[in-house]
Length: 245
Image: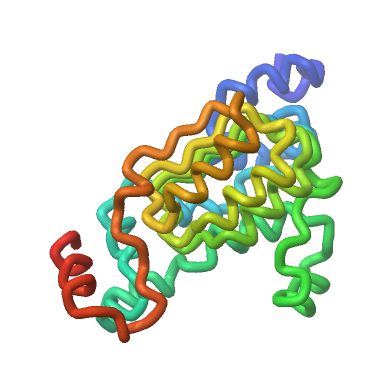
């Protein structure tokens, strides 16, 4: 018996044991397996080990998505987390190659067409997953140094079933996401903002006061040196930054 002679349930079961790359390779062999590859039920969990994985056309975004994880553990994360004004031209060049990958991926979750997104990139940058991925329950983002508050705020606003939000080593995130948790995070049960240097104790206190039952973790975040708004900060603070890196 040939593989394509199996029923759809069996094929889906076989595909479930394969990683994204092997699913994609198998889907290129015939129309039947391509249809199995595109089955939404197959893509309830998406895990990426680096932003560059987001460039690969080997996954499907669908309403079946329940859990999303983008975790980058690399020495380049340190470069991403350096404040822009402190980066050398070489470091800026490294960051320019991937600075928009995570943000662009979140844009793919929106309901808009590629043309619409390109035309209104700034005006509707954060129209996320109202119907594309409405059942998202868990989001984990680690080492995404170029991710900014607006994307997380809109995930909280649009993904009303979100139960778990884990953010680690995302240097550009600030107290704005904590304020958004108090407004939109009614279904949230777990929140991690570990090693996010622009998170303050005041912001954490706001969340604790509004949502005392929330399982909140903020390892090192409130004790790290926050970013300077520009180069005009004191010499001592700038020197501390350089010593850290």
